Amino acid sequence: MTDDGRWVGLGDGVYARRHAELDQTLGLVVGAWRCLVIDTGRDEVHGAAFAAAIRELTPLPWEVLVTHAHWDHFFGTAAFTPCRVWAHPRCREAIAADAKAQRAEWTRHYREQSKPGFAADLAAARLELPTADVAERVELDLGGRSVVLCHPGRGHTAGDVVAHVPDARVVFAGDLVEQGAPPSAGPDAVPAEWPSTLDAVLALRPEVVVPGHGEPVDAEFVARQRDELRG
Image 1 (cartoon, helix red, strand yellow):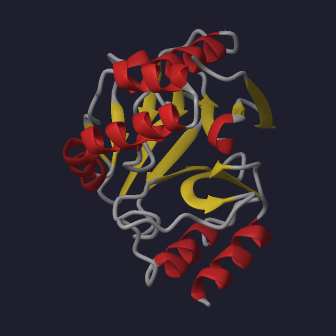
Image 2: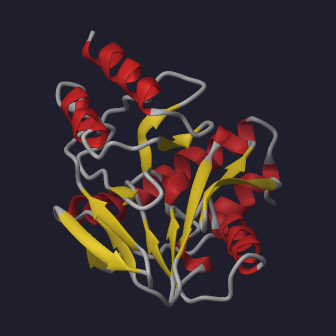
Image 3: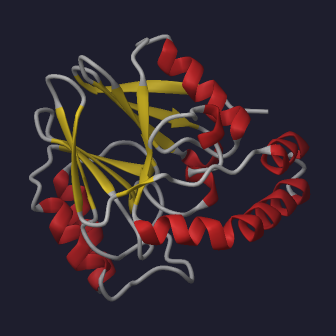
């Protein structure tokens, strides 16, 4: 079971994919040779629907970025492999350690919320671990366009990675930024460092920042969220 998504164009070959469930936002950046998929969704069915939507836009081979180690951002990865899957080393370690518990928690949640289809899809999803490290900074050449993957610091988790598209002045920020609700600070968050991490995101001088949940926002929105986190 999956929910219908819709594309939001952010520039030439730069897209956000919005989903009603969890108010989630995934991403796509297309170059001349390949494309970059940013997060893969809640489960393998959701990931396959995202992959099919991408194929309506481009036939190019893809690579994947997993922005952080929360289930709704990585359990769709098997729909895209085999391919290179980028993440921070701490993200990969957290997925390996915690994916089973996250799957159990959210499968139970969906059953309790009378969403058995979502529960079944999550229970059946194959787990694929990231295969390539973004310890600090990696520049990907997609063909006529570079995307910079970087770890701006700890915040929503200890292993957050953002994707900066310099020519479009877009940053895909994962759950370091959230629109429509306050940022989620779970047990793996690092609240004391989160504001300075957002300072590093803002230093990239984006015109558009794509959150992991909610609609794309501007730099002023991110600055306000940083100030709220700073308290």
